[in-house]
Image (cartoon, rainbow, N blue to C red; front, side, top):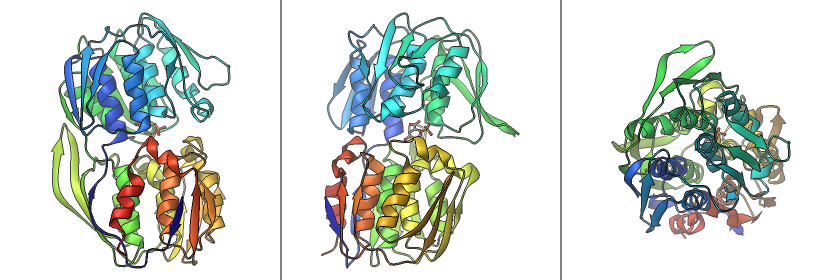
Length: 433
Ligand code: S3P
C-alpha cells in the first residue's frame, strides 16, 4: 500500500475500535464465569477472534453479533476438551493467558499459533505455571509454542517475574484462581492491570500491594469458588488511538478528536511522553465504564522536541513505542528510548525493524540493546518499507508516509487486521484534500 505527504493536515472526529487487551479478557473471563457476559464494543480484529474461536472449541457458546458479543459462561470448571489443537493465531495474549486457565483443567490440550507466535518466548509462563504444579511443555523443546498442557491441581506460589509483562502476570493470576492458596506475582514495574480490574468486577479477590518493594509491584489473588459474568463496556484502544494522536501532532494544520479512548494509567504513558515533547492535547469527558477510565482526546498539531523514555513508564506505552520512535524523527533534538528490550520479542523485533525502516526513510537512528537513539529534525523521504507482518509497524509507516516527501510503500500492509481492520479507511477519512 502507498502513502504520500498530506499537505493540509488531518481533521475530524473518530472513535477507534475496542481495546484489544480488554476484549480478550472479557471473552476469557466470561467463559469461566457463571451466567451471560454481554460485551459491548468488542474488538473484531483477528487476535480477538482467535480468542473467541478457542473458547468455542472448548464448548462455550459465544454469540458474536458485531457490536455486541454474548458469552454464555459455564463456570470455572465448565470448559471441555477441544477436539483439535487450539489455534491462537498471531495472538500472544491468547496464548499466554489461556495457558494459565488450561493448566488447571481436567483435560490435555495442545495450543499453537502462526509462524510469529511459534518464535515468541513462552518459558516466561512455562516456568511459573510449572512451579504451581502445572504439566506444561514446549512440544519442540525450544521454549516456544506449540505448547502441550495437561491440567493438574495447582498450588499458590509467590513468584518474581524478571519482566514487567501483563501477559505473564495474568497467566499466573488465572492459574491462581484455581490454586489451593494465595498466589503472589511481583513484577519490576506495574504492567497493565486490566486482568486485576475485570477479575474483581467478576467477583474474584485480587489486590495490588501498595508498598512498592525493591523488587517491584505485587499482585495477589485468592482462589475463587465462582466468577459472575456481567456487562463489559470496552473502551477504545489507546494503542490504536496512538496512531491518530501522533499523526495529528506531526502533520501541520491537524485537529482530531478521538472519542471514548481508554486512559487507564497503566496504559496511558503515551499521553505523558507526548506532553513532555511539547504536544497540545486535551482530555475531555473523562468518565469510566466497567472500572476502566475513558476520555475523549483532542489533538492539535504541535511543534515537538526530543525526550527520554525509560524505566517505569515503559510498560505503560510498550505497544506505542514504534509510533513514538517514528514521531521522534520529526521532533527537534535527540530522543532516547531505553529499558525496552521487550520490543525485541513482540510480533516482530521492533527495535531492529524500526531502525531499518526509519533509516530507509532518511532518519538518523541508532539501535541499542534495549531501545533506540533518534536524532530528530532530518527531512524524511518516502521509501519501500516492510511491516514484517507486524500490525503496529504497518500502521506506524502508514502515518509516517503522510509526513515524508515522495511515496512510501508499505509491504504487508494488510496485517492491520490483527488489531484494527478499518485502519486505512479511518485514516483516509481524516485527510483534508
Ligand atoms: C498485553 C500485554 C503486553 C502488550 C500486548 C498485550 C496484554 O504484552 O505488548 O500487546 O493484553 O496483556 P507483554 O505482557 O508481553 O508485555
